[in-house]
Structures are given as structure tokens and as C-alpha cells.
Length: 208
Image (cartoon, rainbow, N blue to C red; front, side):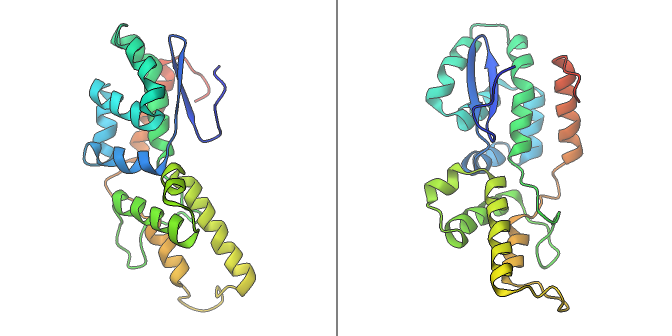
């Protein structure tokens, strides 16, 4: 089994070539728009549309790192490459979606937030609230930004006290977090999980 390059990267190995797919904010922003949202992206990956697969790997691993793998894959049967790549590709998409610390699914007004807006808000939070450079923000994963912001809020509460005992105490910090962690109402998490299970089963994995 291939050792992961880092805790946040996903290894894709084929024919002795390995690339590490990084679910960065930059990749999330680009790939979410590639087919008009994650549902469209997942459909293309389920079909193993080669153009989509190429885009996803190059965006998540970088052109230089992926060129050798893709050049080798182009000389081999597509089915064999599909068996090797489908699991890591679905794992990458799942890793692009941050999990809210309090399972927040809407903004402060109760309206669902499109993923494109949520990712834009995460960039603003990383560069504004957390003080990261734009490059650091783009290279961080959405989950890393979410976790860092949650830790930042907890620090503020520890330093200045919380207003949890006051009615309707949603403050500016919480509203920003809610907006950043809003979910696209059209995204089917259950469908993504089912596809991941299917891809694992096809690869002969038993730890579903």
C-alpha cells in the first residue's frame, strides 16, 4: 500500500508512477465549476470521462507531477487506469468538502449557500480573519481553513468570553462561519458515498 505523502494528500499510483492529489482550496474552486457543480463533476468521473480525469489530476497534483503518469496512462488500456484512479479521484472530491464543526448547513438567514460562494468566503476568512497570504490560502485545504477558523473562534471566546447564555446570540464571527460552511442544496453526499463504496469494491477492498 502506498504511503501518503502528507495527511491531506491522496495517493494515485499506476504503473509505478505516483502522484499526490491535494484537495486545496484552489482545486476546489476550479473543479466545482468544471461541470457546473459537484453533481456534474461526479457524473463525469463515474463515466471516467478522460478529459475530466485529466483536468482533475493536473489541477490537484500539478502539471509537472502528473505529466509522467498521464503519458504512461495514455499508452495503456483505459479500463486498467480507471480501476487505479477511480477510488482516489472520488476520495479527492470528498476531501474538497469541509465538514462544519457544528454541522451547519445554512447561512444566518436560513438560505443555502452555493459551494462557489462558500469557497470564496473561505478565501476571505483565511486572508482576512486568519491573516494568511493569498498563496497560503489557495494551497490550504477547505477543511484546514475551516478547522483553523473554528480554533480562532474558540480562542476569541476563551479570551473575551462567550455569549452562549444570551438569546439569539449569533454574532459576527458565527455568521461568517455559517456563510463559509453553507452547503449546496443540489449536492448529494449520500450519492458520493455510494460511488466511493462502489469504487472500493471494484478494487477488491474489503474495509468499506
